[in-house]
Amino acid sequence: MLTRFQVALTLTVTVYLAASSAIAEEARTTRLAASRVEISKDGRVRVELPDAAGETEGASFRYNGVPYLTTSDWNNNLRRQVSAVLVADVNNDGKKDLLVGCYTSQSFPPYPEWTNLIYYNIGGTLEATPSWISGSQVHTSDLAVGDINLDGYPDVFSADGGSTFSPSRIYFGSATGPSTTAGWIATPSPSTWTTGVALFDFDHDGDLDAFTSNQGVSPNPYRRMLGYRNNGGVLETSPFWQSDEEAISSGPSFGDLDGDGWEDLAVGKWVNFQTAVYKNVNGVLQTVPVWQSGYTGGDRGTAWADVDGDNDLDLAVGRSPMILYTNTGGVLNQTWTAAPPFSTQPQDMKFVDVDRDGDQDLAEFQFSTGRAHIYLNTNGVLSNTPAYTYDDTSTGNAIAFGDINGDGWDDMVVGINGDISVRVFFARIPVILGDMNCDGLVNLDDVDPFVLAQLDPAAYAAAYPFCSTSRGDLNTDTLLNGGDVQGFSNLLTAP
Image (cartoon, rainbow, N blue to C red; front, side):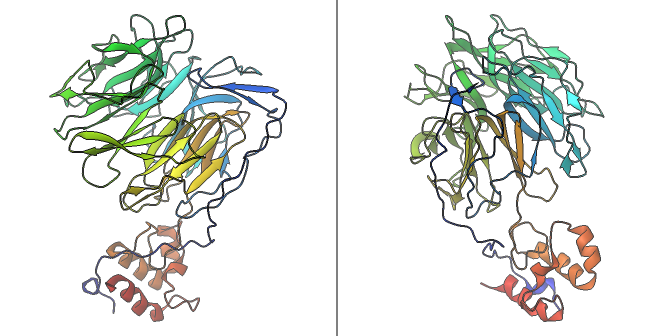
């Protein structure tokens, strides 16, 4: 009789049902007549493409360690230019919804609509047609979700701008989801093209403040970064903080650089300016950087994560190629660079543990190539060649991760430009013998589901709909019975 006293925590090697081939980087299909022109959300990249008619998802690849296929499991059918995608539960029903930010540009042929969208999650899948459409049709660069007014409902911050300087706005949440009418509109002076937003309680007073990266329009393309203070659930419409430097900035993110317990603000800066970190001194954000990259060739965005497992946060920067600064005692040093030919500058990047091995992997999406890459982190060492490549025939601005179908694994979403503008890739749960709850591990948590599968397979199927009883067939006789108990026990007690 298997008891909990027999088991000791251990891990087992992941085995996929389908063998993964070696990474194969293939040349993209030669571009033919430029009957289609796409422009990035910040207006700085222009790509000529063949006609979008009959567009496909591009080359097909298979990889080790990453749970996504290279053909999408869900896509919309709305012609849009997508600037941002975000996976979050915005109607408090316990299921993750999909938010889509859209923008306008001088692309050809033109895009007639650029309202923002929410695809609600209905029973573990996304609705085919968005039931939430923003009442404002403005150029959106970024989206963030959080309970800004402290009423218990998620609010949507839309970082807006474009060449007309549309001000950023907030769609406040309710029991049924966000309002389609903005309940807050920023009033910066001068007007700005907001390129990114970070919602974060920088002063530790219990509410979310908003910090934006910004740019202008030629002949005055530079703007200051701005911060909007939240006073007990009321976000000021005028900024209380601004950087000393005017620049073209993007991708603001908060992380504690020096381990003092106060999160500092990182931001990427474009040509002629240096990506920087602004120190947070006991809730007072400095206006002059405490750290600068020393590089003025143009960066897009920043992201923090403890990549090497030493309990401080490292900083990824969207350069060409993408780079990582390792943090050692509050000192940042460049230690990692994406290897050619994967080194095109990303438009978006995210840290996420895609293989659930306990460390942070790094994902990017490149506008000009339409490629998403995932670089796996193995025991604190980030590979500089991707374990996964998704290659779209269009261009792309956005990538996001979150558990949409409720199986406990993060799914991947990419936002692209074209008649199909969003694709979702559901994680394929790796089959691990003994992993009875499908969390990617074999440990004490698998004992109860193993017993349930033995005694009541129907109840097991209802409790773990994404799992199969075949995971408990330790003696591989195609049956789940008492003959598998010893093998299961051996797995858990192996040194």
